[in-house]
Length: 90
Length: 181
Image (cartoon, rainbow over all chains, first blue to last red; front, top):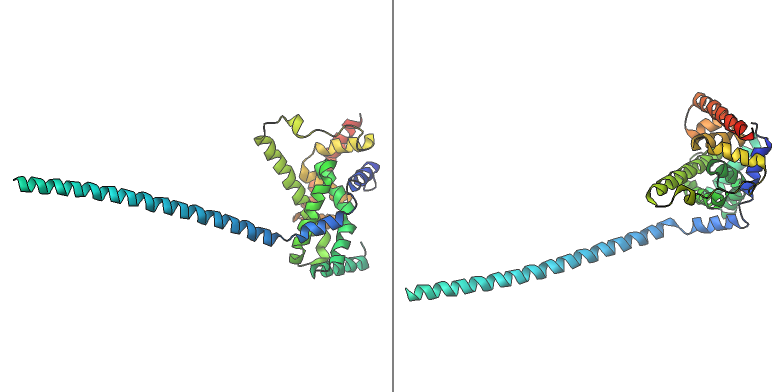
């Protein structure tokens, strides 16, 4: 099949007819909507989400460990008091 | 392409690289029809021609600054177009694996005769039977590119281009003829 084969020519013509008016302007607009600010915004959003999640985990962890420490201390105080009672009884 | 038009193209590319939007627009307008034909020959879908062309030219506009040899613009642009189409076909194939649609629902064929003549339908059918990379090769030949230019586009040797082209032509002829019978 040669370059000027009618079927290939029709194929090219049909393809070219799919390009609607104003194509170049649309491309320029899309290309002008610079990729970098979008990338920076996406990156910032990801970083903020990650920071929020980390803060939430740390807060939850410090609260949970604080409560655990308090209950352990209370338990030890009770044991110490009981031990002191036993010592006095002896 | 003669020497003067090559230098004019090189100048236009250099202007576009420097941010001249008129030169950039001029490049898009000059190549949009040819890229559309190339894209259509590879994908065989007229409904995705414009979207794919837009992707190709947006990539072109964003990457043009990194093109070191403005005189090689055409080879570079068609390489960009070929890679975009092959990525698109690959993504489509992957999507077909992960979506619960039957293939007949995924890619509704363009009705016979809806895109033109029987000749065109036969060519589209024959092209759909061969590998996308071979379709790209044949489309570049139809673009009037020399073997050396195609080798530069595909980043391969002229001998490899000739061998692959011979095989692709044989296959296309076989399917085109069997379709005509």
